[in-house]
Length: 426
Image: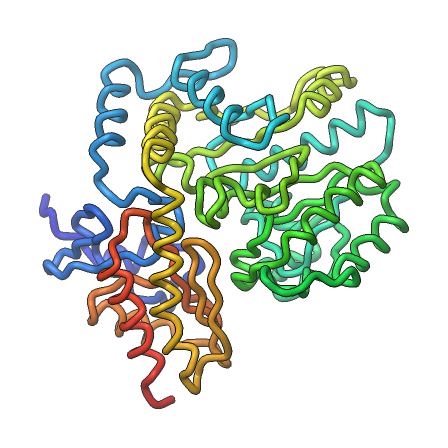
């Protein structure tokens, strides 16, 4: 067998995410990755501005994570979690309880972010069943995104989201106008009024409010005011509704706090984690909940949480996650994220002056360029690759989520290439 990737076979048989099989977008063959660079088969190196969909927070080919995976492989790569346990899962759970907001003491491990959301929704429904209350619906923010499985899709934006195709098949949920005030704008009480009104009218049917704290990701890379999150938590308590915080994209330092909930100093009832959990090495997710939720479920009619993925608590993934969290905690990650924010601010400033650009925005290690019109994905992707960077835009947005180890020169290069790409005639 040849080591060269058969791109013709890939194009004809391999279905890539959000891609047509009849007219697929080009795929660039990666031979290896190290640090913050992807090496293509033709030898070209690309600075990765995406952290592989926000997961590789330490970059690629990280010695400590490689060693953790190798050592665990010598013991066992997998064992069922039903009726068995192992040190990597216990160690990971201990670390997650220690670093997440206080009070999230129970850890349910799963295999992807979407499944972590599914588990959270099940937790909320089963909790209220145990309380003898018929609360089976959810309220979500418009422009929110929570995953691609059916429960998760039902709480994604119902109109502008990517899941409108399935409208007739999804459970009907409640939706409220998304926060309008940006992260650094003066707070105005009317921003929370739509949520208050909805909960006042329908709280008796609502199991939980689910939201992405501070950052609405795939729904537009929007950064909203921390006070909204504080007020939302208070409303949930007032109207006897659980709060689910989906920190799959924002967890592990991306916004400048270890978890975005910390910007508002609130503790959700249920917390979903993924992406950066293993530093991008393995697919793994976690759903944490309070003792109140866990005890309620355990004392309900079922007596158990009705979920159990085959690869739940995978030892290999858990061992790498432990190493990734330890590496993060041992690093000056706050200073690194602050520095990335400063460099992005410098690099985005001239981009914001371009005719095609509506605005730029920044929070932690997230830089966003919003254009007036949707970019031509195939054309701009080819431009980026030709100029030595990997950036994956969507819609009107060209954004950066660098690994925390990226240096100033590489960030400047990413921004310069975006500038060049958007400074061309329409």
